Image (cartoon, rainbow over all chains, first blue to last red; front, top):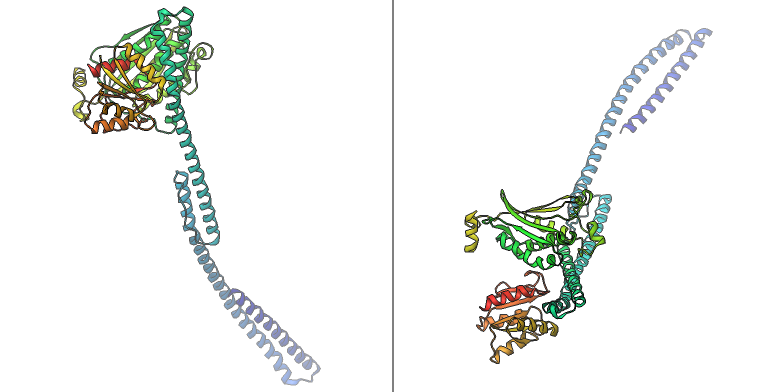
Length: 397
Length: 119
């Protein structure tokens, strides 16, 4: 519109210039006639007429110019409004698909690999949507492949560990059988059998750790806490450990006060943690070392301490001691049969129970591991039937 | 001392079990799978307790025990499993099982449990 207005204005201006030029021409002719004295009164009138005619023309063109300017302004305004409308239409037609894409990307990133967007809107956003869907489909496929591989790996570890246990049971069982009759063995034979047994125990630990680690990684490491007495648990572990510590003339001293409250734990798991801590104390300490196991109630928890007067752990190693595959210096040089996984697994297990584990050590003096585990809720609140013995112990606290 | 029926598909394990149990003074009968356990009992030789491997070809210890319990047999039973815990062994919760023995076997603990169950 504005353009048409401008065109018309240019045309008018041209006409105006022509008319003015013509008017001057007529006036000039008239003035020439007046000068020659041939035009008479008529020529004089024409001169005055032409001046008037030009003045009229000038008024007319200036009014036209104003109209045209207004027209141009109106045209511009209308054009701008149109453009704005068009633009906002464009924006809103892009905004919805884009918002959808942003939402979907968020869901995808959060782990919902089945997220897809509806492909629509402008061709650009539609292309974007299609590309997004393609990417999501690929991610979903990738993830399901990975999950399948993970499952296969877990299955493999479970099966391998299962299949290895039967022959291991035989090897360990028959070696133990020999040791039951140790007096009929020569010292050298006894030593040989001891080595077989040591290695069996190492293999068992390796298998157990491997299994726990696989479960832990898969988020399938679970505990089933139940009200449990502390003292029998510790005594049981210490009893099984004595066979090993006595060969090295190490002593284990228990300090467990009577009437400790029941703790809310899965007994086998706590046994596993204590075996790990005691085995570490035994293997990292020299012959004749002392090991202590103590328990005490601290607030809403029971703390179980396993200490030794072994070589201790340097500060830089102490910091990383609960990380996987961290082993003390002795673990790398001596006969220590650890896997470097025991403490990492113990920490996971303690934390699954809602407890905590810390290590303290002074080089040259020994180490202490403190495990804190939650006290079981009173039977009246927990609602399930703790056995008579358990209740007595709880009431006694 | 008790008569214990031991079932395992490994002859080596059976020999080991028999030796340790007999050293502890028990009388031992053996079976190489769950079906043999059922046949054994059907034939009239009824043990004081059962020591059954969880996984055996033909019939597992768990399946055999389920059939025995359904038939009204109430002798105590221990399930021997290579798995570390009950969850992995897929042990049924509805079945009356007196306990689990994990491979590799802690014989002292197992003999204690047997003495406890048959006293």
